Length: 533
Ligand code: B12
Ligand code: SF4
Image (cartoon, rainbow, N blue to C red; front, side, top):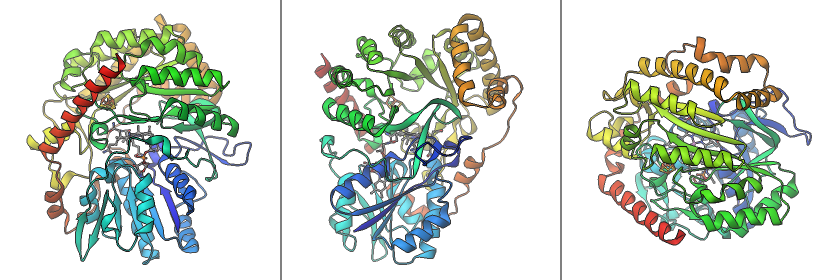
């Protein structure tokens, strides 16, 4: 069988750097590689199938070229992979274009958003034959064998005789070592690591890729889709398998790797074994990861630094304990201070803090406390995003109950909480507080952490034009951007299919489902805490 896989992008989240070709002749793109399709490609090829990948970040393969290629290859299946609500409109546009040009080819969607909204998506996009839910490795192997009668393919939503059929879920696969390493070499692209991931501040010009060493997170943060996507479970590959992949990447010439794990810092024994393995194998790749501040693996930060962990990112969210509690973050400000300090003392080069503002019940004083807290922490970099609500999360469920969003008409949209929730500060206030907070923070950092600021600027200067750096630094002092971004406008401007409302009633995530996932999450956490002791 021949499968074409396309990674659908939201153009906000990748960019071309000034120099567009790497030494090896491949086009250079700033952003994360499409590890979802690369994973599936490796699985398909090992099973003897053919696979051709396209990434929308590739300037040489815009939609019309992808469609021409599909018509040339005449594959048995075309899979469109996309991550979030924000990229759904782009996936839909491309699926319609492919279907218009080729009435015979089978089309499939996969990824987190498609998984969580499968029936709604199937109704709204009848041109897409299959919506694939959850892990794709075994699913795609099963699907290519059963394209004409996929009734037995677990995890699939499809249509039979005009009716949407929602096959049962696939049992969660725990044995992740069975899958081959992602197929990173078959796309004509090289990726550049940028910071903080979605803005053009380049972290490393080394040949960059991502790796997934674990999946899921069992914590209950109200704004996060990860527990629900992973049914409250955390699953991991063995340390040995991870180290083997590092060796493989070093041999291929990669110099920087970022883990797309939701919570890498979960299991001390595994982290220790990975670090030891990296050192013993003489791997020199610099790597980065994300984790919670309450991790019980903090005594391993020095070992991580010695094993070339260069970047550690924490979801700090807020400098106000009451906001953290409202977000159900289950962490304290003291834990944040300890983790950031431990990471810096251990010699981790770049410690990053993710923050959100514009949360429910947040006051002006809370926002100010957040910026002041961020200023005082020894963080190297930080990002302050407006809190958004996505379908599937506990916060979305709460908003449905409070009548702030309507599952039937809003499921494919996302909202800044401050735009729809009267318990949030108005958007203009949040915006003004962010500008003022950033100004205070920059000035504080320059006064109290001059060395870190100089090092950061030096890093920026190596890879970014001075004009862009000036823009980035001066934006909080002069910037005054209003209105929705182009991507936000597009993701709301999705047309209303005739079946949409009826479909929505079929697939609403019930309170029972959500509650059972949260119960599972709690049980999983307890189990892991006991194991870690
Ligand atoms: C890395 C990452 C990013 C990277 C993007 C990387 C990239 N390649 O473009 C960056 C940092 C840029 C990013 C940005 C954003 N992200 Co993000 N991101 C992630 C993260 C942490 C990991 C994704 C990943 O690489 N997974 C590893 C690969 C192997 O898994 P996968 O892609 O899911 O593929 C597997 C299956 O889904 C399936 N599959 C996938 N496609 C297909 C196709 C077919 C045909 C089949 C059969 C199967 C299949 O098979 C694969 C193997 O099992 C996820 C969390 C998560 N755990 O998923 C959040 C997540 C996807 N992001 C999220 C969000 C909200 C965003 C942003 C909107 C944030 C923002 N406001 O700025 C943006 C939007 C980006 C976009 N273009 O859509 C949310 C999505 C929620 C939602 N309902 O929309 C998630 C779930 C995080 C969360 N906390 O809830 N993100
Ligand atoms: S800690 Fe919270 S925000 Fe982070 S992955 Fe887990 S549930 Fe999501």
